[in-house]
Length: 410
Image 1 (cartoon, one colour):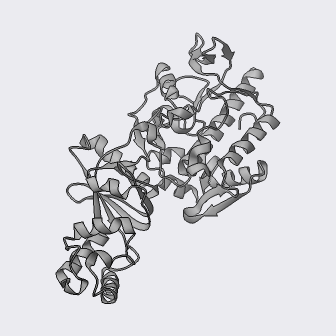
Image 2 (tube, helix red, strand yellow; image 1 turned 120 degrees about the vertical axis):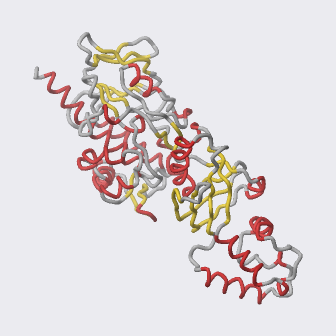
Image 3 (cartoon, rainbow, N blue to C red; image 1 turned 90 degrees about the horizontal axis):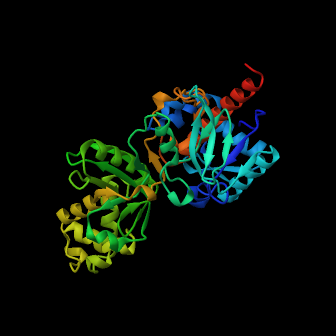
């Protein structure tokens, strides 16, 4: 937005091309935003979302959509959960549209340039940056938009946190958010690759307190569980473990309702219909219409019913055990995957040290922050990218005004 406001802009990129991390968002489709109002965005940014109220008022989700469609000529579509994607389902098209705009605005872009330090003048104000090739790039305004510490292969290796710390800013505790969970049950690896759709998943602590619940899709992996609903719930898990202590000593319980569309009475009726149909078969051969094949032996083991028992011999009490297993299929979360596998970094530059209207540092004149480097994070669904767009817009406009004012001698 700085270049659009008429200020000269130099973009320094440590990778050999722009948008490397953007290319992998939304499973390569790029969930650019969420088609909801400001309150809806903030509600889905539990990590200091209210800090963005001013930035969102200046550039909200609807303005983001108009920007991509009208200014960048990139057709969008809205899917389930108000998620917004390019019609082409290609993240590369989002990156290409943004790169074209940079060229149109004659923004100078230098790739393979790693910033090593942000330098200040005698009065403490920003005077430019130095790169690893020894070059000094002067400037009265510097926007730090380096991302967090997730997916370091894309360039997000935590540089921005170091810059902030060196300039006297507080960086709050960094931890992974939107990250797969590790589970204790050895049989989970037997379900590797199994995707469950339209399930209700609840996260509880040892005392039974509900930490969060989500409806949607999840995935079993060789180490535990992942997928959209698990990633959203992981935010609650990592917050809980940060306060309570080591995950191994404070496990959490992921309870999965495999049939949330049915009431217990309806599910029991469904089970009885299947049992009537397969009454002469063994139990292990009677669940094919109810469950995915790989899940059947696990459910049988957890239900406590002998797999060789004939269906017509199953008691009412055993049927209730099966119903309980189907509605509260539970795995024990004993940790999370490393930061490098998380989608978002929780923590970052302390929001109390940033002006929420301009994203300007309250400590160093000419310094601005935007995106994941700031201590703001949220759930999946386009909310984190919207936060980045809004912060970037605020920072760009404010930085451009600073440059233009200084040129006019104001």
